Image 1 (spheres, rainbow, N blue to C red):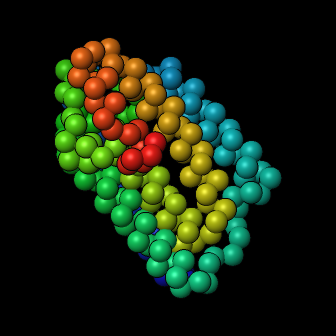
Image 2 (cartoon, rainbow, N blue to C red):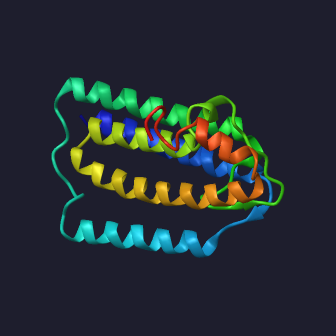
Length: 182
């Protein structure tokens, strides 16, 4: 099973390296530091507390081949969806809750399915990781999910202000994170 761990490790590392390199091409803007820092501090404190009480430490890796295959499928699907969304939004992408100087409202490609497909993709990849390795990682996915929902709400307020006619309509015709549901 160490091969599976290595697969996930290399997959996540390659994804985040791509993400950092792609960040150099984004438009200028203003990060919403006060929101972002507070949310990140809360997430880190919760993660440290969970580590201290050993909720997300160790544990046996799954030995169920079906779980491994489903996990890898969800992982690849999620990262692929996030990368598709990142490529599609192009230079309009920014760190969570950032505000671009000259934003464009992107509603095509993966943004037809959900308003925040990058968040959706990363969460699906996280669920795939937990499924393929160890269920205890779902705790981390839940914490990241809380951060993403908070970020999406803050971003949507900004987008509603910047696009008072178009964004409310887009919001009515699409879901936040899960197509047809949420």
